[in-house]
Image (cartoon, rainbow, N blue to C red; front, top):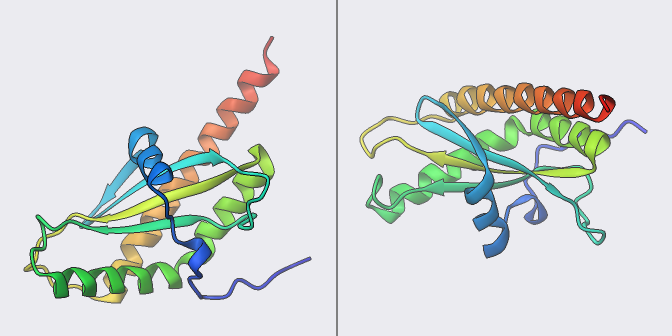
Length: 153
């Protein structure tokens, strides 16, 4: 059945929980592009997991980098909007990961810029799209490596 991916960001697609976030920062891999960094990991799905094949994402803007709360909130809002538009590639990656290994994808998008940098949704969309492509390439390489290791005695 071919489902249409809606450009929404539901509550169940936001990464929550202290243990999950700590696990992501402890064992995640990262890429950097421009003013964004992505930290991602694949985790074993729980049996009661309602989020079958969607990626869970966390948006981080450091208080040290952006001291004013209103500016941090605006950057986070722009990041959510940009991710929402580029979500289809993240969902495709999460679905292939779930099919191949039964795991789900967790990631954090971290803003590493400074307060003075001018931001737009289009600029963030390009960076998020590039980061998601890097994640897809890396996960495909890891899955190929795992398949080769499983085949050899």
